[in-house]
Image 1: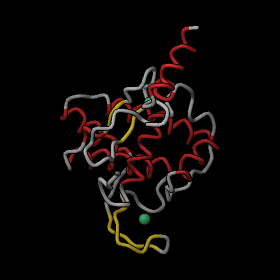
Image 2: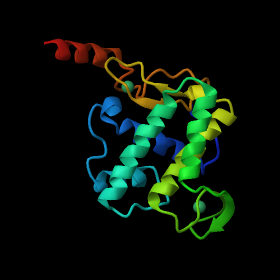
Image 3: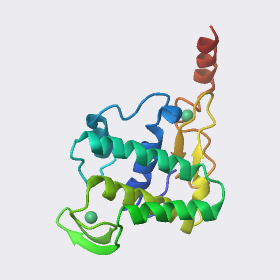
Amino acid sequence: MSKMLFGTDTQPSAEMAVALVNSLPERGGQEGLPDSESLLRMGRALQIFYQPDGSQAELLAMRNLRQRLNEIIRTPELQPRMDMLNELFFSASAIPQIVTHPEDPTPHFHYTLEDASYIDHIKAITTYALSRLIIIGEWGRLRTCEGHDCNRLFLDTTRNGKRLYCNSKTCGNRIHSARYRNRATS
Ligand SMILES: [Zn+2]
Ligand SMILES: [Zn+2]
C-alpha cells in the first residue's frame, strides 16, 4: 500500500528528481535524456506543470542538474547535503510564494517566479522535494535498488518503508533475476 509522503504538489517533484537521477547512464543503464523529446516525455509522464522549451542548452542544463542531484543523494553527511541543496535554491533564484492559478486552484507553493526558465523551475521543485524529505525525517526513503545489477534510485512510498527494489515485478522477482544472471554470464 502506498501513501503520500507529502502533499500532491510535492510528490511529482520528488518523482521528477528520481526520474532525472535515473536518466543517468550509471543509474538507469543507458542515457535516459538523449534528446529534448525525452525530457518532454519525462515531464509529461510525471504531470509536471512546467514545459521545457526544447533547446539544446536546456537539455545540457538538465543533465548537469541530474548529476548534481545524484551527488546530493550520495552525500551521507547532513550539513554538506543541506549546503548543496541551498546552492541549488540560490542558483535557481528561488523565491517561495503561495499561489493559485486556473490549472491548480488549490493554494500551493511556487518556488520560482512565473517567468523563470524551465531549468530554474525544475531545479527549485526538485530541490524543494529533496529538502522536504530531510525536514520530515524521511530521507531514508530515497534508496538505491537492491536488485541484481540494478543501480536505480527509488522513493519508497510504502507504509512500512521497507521496499527493496525499484520495481517488484522486475528487480524484485527472483525468477527474473536468476534468468537475468544466467543470460549475463552466458
Ligand atoms: Zn502551481
Ligand atoms: Zn531495480
